[in-house]
Amino acid sequence: MSFDLIVKGGILPDGKTVDIGIKGDRIAAVEPSIDAEAGRTVDATGCLVSPPFVDPHFHMDATLSYGIPRINASGTLLEGIGLWGELKPLLTEEAVIERALRYCDWAVSMGLLAIRSHVDTSDDNAMTGVRGLLAVRDIVKPYLDLQLVAFPQDGFYRAPKAREITLAALDMGVDVVGGIPHFERSMADGTRSVTELCEVAAKRGLMVDMHCDETDDPLSRHIEQLAYETQRLGLSGRVAGSHLTSMHSMDNYYVSKLLPLIAEAGVSAIPNPLINIVIQGRHDTYPKRRGMTRVPEMLKAGIRVGFGQDCVLDPWYPLGTADMLDVAFMGLHVAQMTSPADMAHCFDMVTGVNAAIMGLDHLGLAVGKSASLVVLDAGNPVEALRLRAERLCVVSRGKVVAERPRRDTQLTLPGRPKQVNRRHTS
Ligand code: FE2
Image (cartoon, rainbow, N blue to C red; front, side, top):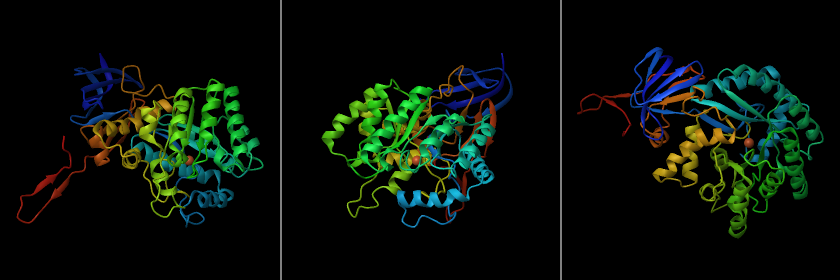
């Protein structure tokens, strides 16, 4: 037997050392040792080999626009939305495509090979982003799964044309139905928007991913309606609630009733730790709320929880590098998930769990799956998180798409022999 590519000596997230044989765009063998001809061999000896990173929550129509036309002075969600409103009329399709492709290049270099991006569908200006990202989805298709969510940023009912344009974007081939119930003008409108948008998804056979309760207001409870509609319409496993930050501030008794409902409905949760910790709690003095939803409690209740990135260099966030290890690193700190098992799970959240939320069954390190993987300069998932380890090699659909050399530091210290410093413990 011969292979197009063999990745030799890598350590899987579960600790097994294996060779991975790839034929075409598929994994053809995962064995303790493969002794066969190969078009190319990647030496991964002693390195973690992981399924690709997956980001289930991003805004690619806004990314890399930081400072255009100005920065967000208050740092709040609402000023960010206002600023995005100023930027939208200035968008051109070419600029959206150029920025999005630049971001996708960063993503690939970081081993991030699948992204779910919301795209604004509030008004005519936003359609520039829809057209641009549909074009980008086609361009990156050979190496990156880009899933688009029709997202009425200014409110499905609140913005006069959002309903019409959201439906038009779905007609144009946008993949997932989005929403923003907490931004509608009343609780009742928020509730109504969840119902109508879930019905749209059920009718069209689409998935749902709503910005839901992204507020510190403990009475923002649209996740309850989202779970209810998921059950009513038989959408289990196809619906995600993004952010859910209000749950942080909710009454404990109410949460004890809410979590089993979300679990029974099969609704996934997507907190976005970098953004939640920066944007929420801005109205607080001290103590200041952490602003991230109740991740360990949801996991304990059996709810599928992934971590998303949300923003990079845009009206809401002045930083970001397309590194899902940054996202998981922040997430485990804010959620205080520091046991070895919890940290390992945080790594899984930004790889396998996020892939499952997005319905990407073809990803995973097993025979027959898509030959997409990342070789990291770390011995195990926890070390990868601690180091935000270098992505030494990224393989997408059987092709090496990114490589970089290991970076060790030469130390020259007075009174000490010269040495190469590595921060690994494994
Ligand atoms: Fe978002």
